Image (cartoon, rainbow, N blue to C red; front, side, top):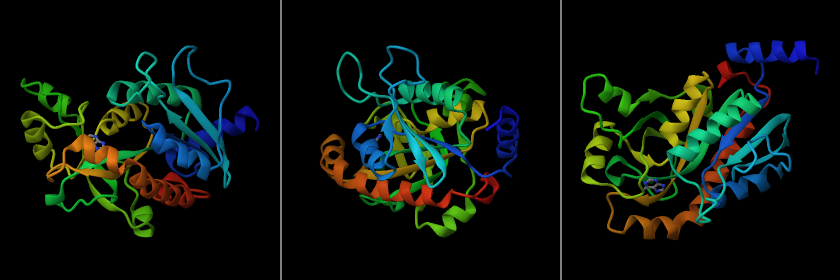
Length: 261
Ligand code: ADE
């Protein structure tokens, strides 16, 4: 495509009138990412667009006319575990936006859910709002900056089409929940709790990239089982529910503009 046409397409997409063409799906864990890599028949990019030496991985390909990129922050180079949490999520979101200029970002992953607010294992939520629960700065206005609450991109037609639960998401860098975190999560009115969402939202908002958050519940925070145990026990099975939800959302995109979501 000529540069001038591409520029016109991007301009239309920013205004919401052109068809969505490039999406970035940010996923923190390999177990969550690989089923979707298979579903969309993506391949790992041998010439990664990311700086040399980082563990970040791009899987990409064309699916139903969409350029799909799944970005996984990779394994920690010292410890060999998935690079979960807000720091890696922020970095890969920034770098993916710079390198790939997506029309839309999807942050897909797992979350803890509160049964008192209606969450059950394997539910998939579309987050209506995101906020942080571990950035407490008790100084006027800095307090709101720390919480970083944001409404997510509104997708009324998508919500009508796909049967997903809707709820507020709270993000922090710990899998467990301290009493301070719990108070902040309640103040955020969250139904689900993850380790990346609000960070992805912050970076995407810097560049005004619409972002959708899909989170599948692996553990019940207000239940009887220890969180880490329940999370590990359910991770593989719940990933299948996440895969299905992400596929349904992606299948809704071809031929549609952002304003039609
Ligand atoms: N991801 C899955 N379960 C989680 C929890 N309880 N807290 C944060 N992130 C999670």
